[in-house]
Length: 207
Image (cartoon, rainbow, N blue to C red; front, top):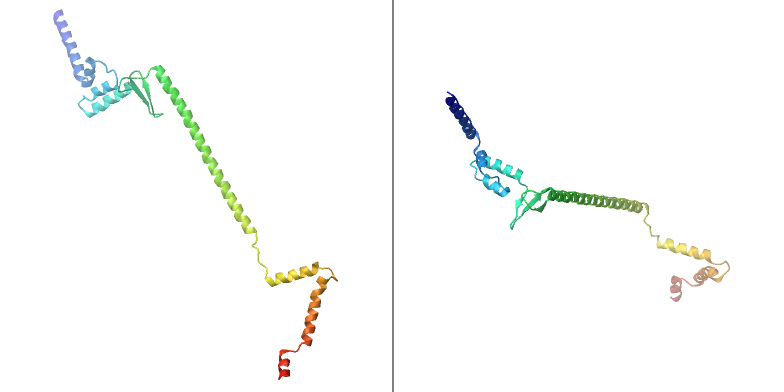
């Protein structure tokens, strides 16, 4: 009786184990008897062997989560940090704590450089804006000054000559020859006119 009960228990346990194996996805029990991949490339090679595209995509995502580094030609691995767009050489498929510390320090320096570059660009843009504003103010001031200054008008020549004669008359000393000569000259011209015969009278006398 005990033998029958033991046989039934063993059969039941074997059936449970068989059901679990059948219910487990193919890639899960395939990794159960295979060794764990050592890096991303080996993990990706195994993912490519899965039957469906959905299984391949899920397996590649798992490989990417497990391994940060990628193989280098000639040995070693490289880690690409997309935050600072830079690659770092690492010894294994994942950065060690010391290597990760150097990567973080490099990222901090990268952020500081970016911050300085942004501040310099903002300062240059502000200075250019101020220069443009100063130029606009200067142009407005020149335009306003030009509108205020009247355009000089040339005086008539006759008026200028009369003004010069008056100025000379005001500047001469009374009783001097330079002041009396214009008057004497006018008087002599009038006497000549009185004693000189007119052209019509001269012609009649000659006839």
